[in-house]
Image 1 (spheres, rainbow, N blue to C red):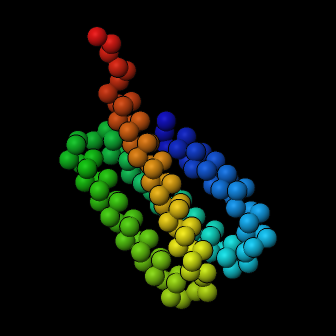
Image 2 (image 1 turned 180 degrees about the horizontal axis):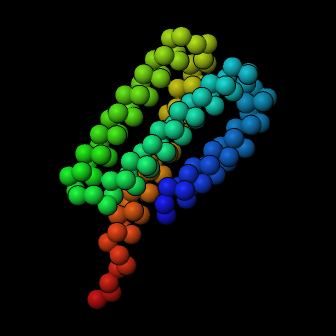
Length: 132
């Protein structure tokens, strides 16, 4: 599966999350909470797509370049998320609990998807299994 297929999977997960969260947010939430959850999800979507692009670029390179790219991009993306978290909490009227909760949930979910994408990419490069 390439980047396009992975982005489609992320879209399906976001759509499912919207459908699951729509009723509780409408009934019990406020527009501020809904916006905060959407921003948390959006940051995580950008993060996972950047990770997918980095993995796709690095997967055909040498092991050294691959690990430098994957771990380097992971560190850079974590720093950027931290900066976004700080700026949004400090300078906007974000609902902190909703924002941080959505950021956590989507981060874990999308990182799991990214790991599976990485494993499938590595398996695809090795070729089909040989039965002995």
